[in-house]
Picture 1: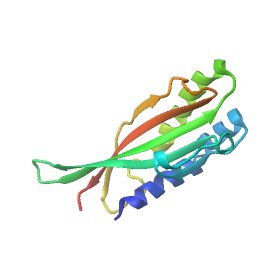
Picture 2: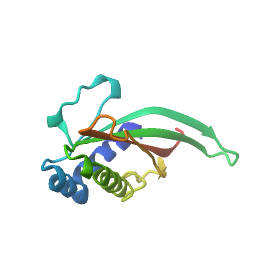
Picture 3: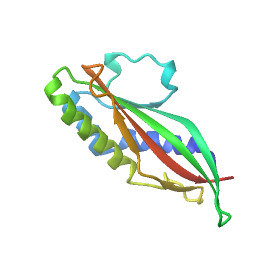
Length: 149
């Protein structure tokens, strides 16, 4: 199994999550766009938001003492939205992060039935603190543990 199928599963999971989709439509009046791309190679326009773009910048191979070989893939979700009202932005950022992580944890094996994906681990989350208001971004770094093939 290729890690590409895991990325495709994440795209599908986030694109089709009813609660996340309803949240985006209710808060920002637009449907969510989810895609894979390189962080430094894409220009984002206000009309593109809300948006989640997915990258996989690193993988660490681990040789464990019990002879099980694992890889930890760091998948990053860059999640942005437009909110002209600064008073609403922080609450919406937190709710957006929660909806995204809730969707990710519906299936921690990322649809895999072969044993390749061992787990989707607890993510680290860091937001831009409103530095580029009225556009807000958060980065969710999700470790996905797979069997070393």
